[in-house]
Every structure is written in structure tokens, then in C-alpha cells.
Amino acid sequence: MPSTQTKSGHSALHHLRRDFSADPRLLRISLIAVVIGGCGTLAAFALLALIHLFTNLFFFQVWSFTARSPAEHHLGAWVILLPIIGGLIVGLIARFGSEKIRGHGIPEAIEAILFGKSKMSAKVAILKPLSSGIVIGSGGPFGAEGPIIMTGGAIGSLIAQHFHLTSAERKTLLVAGATAGMTAIFGTPIAAVLLAVELLLFELRPRSLLPVIVACTVAGFTRPLLLDSGPLFPLQTADVGIVTMFSCVIAGICGGALSAFMSTALYKIEDIFHKLPIHWMWWPAIGGIAVGIGGYFEPRALGVGYDVIGDLLNNHLALQVALSLLLVKAIIWMLALGSGTSGGVLAPLLIIGAGLGTVLGPLLPGGDAHLWPLVCMAAVLAGVLGAPLTAAVFAFGLTHDANALLPLLLTSGVAYGFTVLTMRRSIMTEKIARRGFHIYREYGVDPLERQHVEEIQSSVVSSIPSHLSIGDTLTLYFGADQKYRSYPVIDAEQRLLGMIDRASISMHTGTDATKPILTLLNAADPQHPLIVALPGETCRIAAARMATHHVERLPVVSDLQEKRLIGIISRSDLIKTYQSFFDDEQKRERLLNS
Image (cartoon, rainbow, N blue to C red; front, side, top):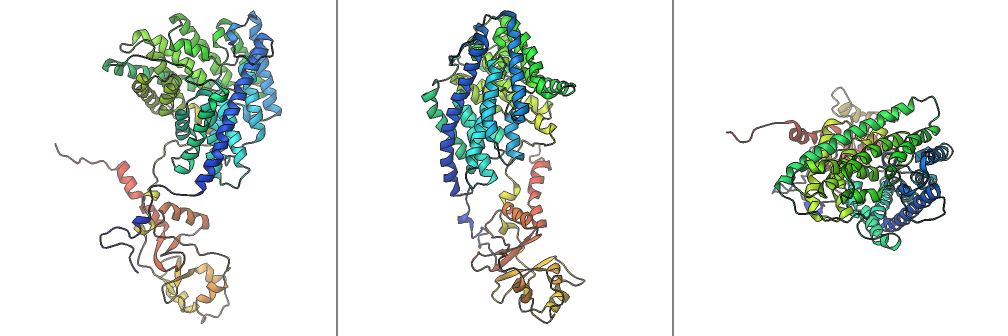
């Protein structure tokens, strides 16, 4: 058979290969993402308005959308009842509305992406922000980011469902909506894109990355039209020195340890709730009891607490106050979230992490006093989410403190490493694993994508001439010495006419054995296309085609017009592509002798 290799050893098709797959549909998906980005800003505005409204209704008994802290209330011990009432209302909404509103949003979004074909309902898009507004407005110690990720994702999914799209394209638009909402809430578009890469997309391809970037930037540009512009917590720390590096390692270890403890404790608490002899509808109200009691003794632990984050970052709170706030916030957050109520995790983690930094600050040399609440905030976030780049860039986006970038990256990386080495799963994947779905969060370039069909195909092909009789075909190719399950049938010009196997011949038992084998191919369904591979296609495409059509061998043709047979590829050929992967991962060798 003619070879597809040139004299220099390079493929004759190398000029056709690309760094990335190019699909014109990418432009269409990106245009839809523009709309989704704008919708994400509207959804964020509506969610924050609901939180402000319910905060005013519960704590101040006024109809107002003005942002106020629950800590300013004058209800005394009656404040204990508010989170209970809020939890009861949300339990009823979840029971009779949609159970999918329970939880903090990100695991639910991941589950919809990986196991639900990225389909979300309009009911979730409406009930999630409503329930979260009630919970947070009644004092729940949560943030708006989890609900907006779920709400924005639902909006992206709903818009996608109005078009003829693949599941992968719906996933892209779901994630675009989720991250656009996060951008609008926090004003951190780069961190939102990184969150998509590290937590939601499970791939790094132009087909998904570009629409997400488009949606996040649109949300970033439209955010000032409805919400405050600029960083939420502007901060400027001093330049750092070499001593700061060692302190960042210590802070990262402490942040990782706290992350691991809270993640483990959270699901222990959830297990306790599952053992209660009452319906889960009542659990949020029970969790609300702990929130109410904690909020009575530490009022600033109630609600979103953005003002608390600002005070911690600027060292406006005394050490004893910060320690008390850290303990109460962590306890009521774990109890409330473990009860299955609706709320986000990022804002509570920011408060807990910043509180840790305030406590550690006097003990860590190097860096100014404002640095440690910031880096510990990122460390706790990185450890809980398992997303160090998101955590570091998110903290930078909230403060615009360029001097802190290096300490943020190191501390987040150390905390991430700590939790990877000590925990099997993160808070984001544990809930999904308990439902029977395992998620492996590492991904790289598939060896099947690094090689092309022409590199592993067999160029010497055992083929059947189309004029050969059925009887001779059975004797020569499907007798006692049969080597392959199927064979390509070719004409005199080496053009592929089809594939034949013993089952194909058995289907036509009784056919005159003296007739040419071409007779059986002509008797096949004329609408059934030839299943072939092209030399320039990746092995991944060939493997997917084999799996889809349940075949073990694919003929390789020069092009789809002439269909000249130039080779054949089998499943065993595809497996060989993993040899280099095995060598890279498992083969240890010393290349330099001492």
C-alpha cells in the first residue's frame, strides 16, 4: 500500500494539522454567551436585591432594598427565631418546589454538567435565588456566590435548551452563565474563568474556554450599570521579603489544615442529620437553631458579612473579637450547611480564612499586618475548593493588591497541596460521591489526541478483491486460519467498497456461493454509510467512531471522495498509544551518572 510518509519521515498531511480543533459553531456559541453574560449580571442584581429585601424584612421589619448588616438589629433574644423561620420556609420550598435548591450550588452544578447532560429547569432558576435570599436574609451565614452559580448556570442551560446544541455545548453555556453571575457579584472575571477551568468545565478547549471568557467579560463590563464598580475590598500591602516566603508556607499549612477539618466536620454533621427520625424538610429549621444562638452571642456572624471581611482585612477588629468571630462563624456555617439549607460557601470561607490570618498575624514574621488575613483567606478557599489558582486570583480580584500576588500564590498552593495529600475528596465532590458518582479532577492531554491515525495504522492490509466469490471468501479468509474478524473489500483501483465479516455472510445464507462477494455489499442498506478513518484524524476520533458503531477495525482511506484504501487501524493499535504514557508515568531511570 502507498505510504503516507514523505522521504524526510514527516507526514504529508502535517500542514493540515492544527494546535486546536476548529469548529465554526464556536462563533455561534460565543454569540449566545454574550446574551448569557448580560443575563448573569441581571441575575446577580436580582439575587442581591432579594438578600437586602429579606434582611430588612426579617431584622428591621421594613420593605427596603438598602444594604444593611443584620448585626445592627435591636431584637435581642428574639433574633434566635429568625434563622429558624427562614430554615422552615426554605425546607417547605425544597419539599414542594424543587429539592435541587438544597446545598451551596457548586456540587449541584457539577452534577448537572457531568451526569445530567447540562439540563437544568426554570424552577431552579427561580427558586434557588428566592430560597437563598430568604436563608441569608434571615441570618444564614452564607454568601451569594453559590446561589448565583446555580442560578446563572440554570439560566445558561435554559437558554441553551432553546437551540439545537450538543450536551457539550450546553455544558459550556451552563458554565458561562454560572461564572458570569459570579463575575457580577464579586467583580472578579479572571477568577471566575479560572473557577470554570478548575471546577466546572473538566476540559481546557477553545470550544468551552472562549464562550466562558466572553460571558465573564460581558458581565464585568455590564456590572457597573447595576452594581458598584471597583474591588469589593480595596487593599494595599507593603512589599514582601524573603522571610515572608517561610511565613506563607506556615500560613498555607494552617489554612490547609483548617480546610480539611471543616470539610470533614461538615459531612460528619450531614451524616448526623441523615440519622434524624424526621423528614429532611425540617432539617434547615433545626440548623437555624444553631445559627440563631450563635448570632445572638456574635451578631456579626449572621448574614453574608462583607463588612466583616473588610474589617478583618484592614485589621479593624481586635484579636479576641476576630477569634470569637472565627469560631462562631465556622460552627454555625457547618451546622447550617450540613442541614441541607440553601446558601453559598465562598463568603463564609473568606471570613473564616481572614479570621485565621488575624489570629496568626502576630506570630508570623515578615509582611505587614494586612497581608496575613488576605493570604489565609485565599489558603482556606484553595483548600476547601481544591482550586489554588482560583483562590489566589480571586483574592487579588477582591483587593487589587498587586504586592500580595506572590504570597497569595504560594499560600494557596501549600494549602492545596496539604488537602490533596490528606483528603480523598473536596467539599465540592464529596456530596456527589455520596450519590454514587465519582469525579476524577485531574486531566491532561489524552495520548489518543497526541497521535494521528496515519502514525499507528497498518499500511499492509489484508483485503478482499470485490470479484472474489462468496465461497472462496469463506475458504480463504474465514476458514480455520482466519486472522481477523473483518476485512475490507476493494475494487481494482484499491477503492474501498465496504467491510465484510462472517456475520455479514451468515445473514445471507442460501445465496449462490459462486456470486462475487460484492453481491453481499450491494444487498446491504444503501443508506448505511461506510465507517472509515482518515489519516489526519486523531486516534481519539477513531476510537470514538469505533465505540459508536461497535466495530473493532476501521479502514483508513485517502479521502472521502475517492476512498482509496491506504491502511487499517484496530483497537489493539489504539491501545499501543498508551505505551509512551506508561513509560512517562511509571518508568524511573537515572540519565546522568554521578
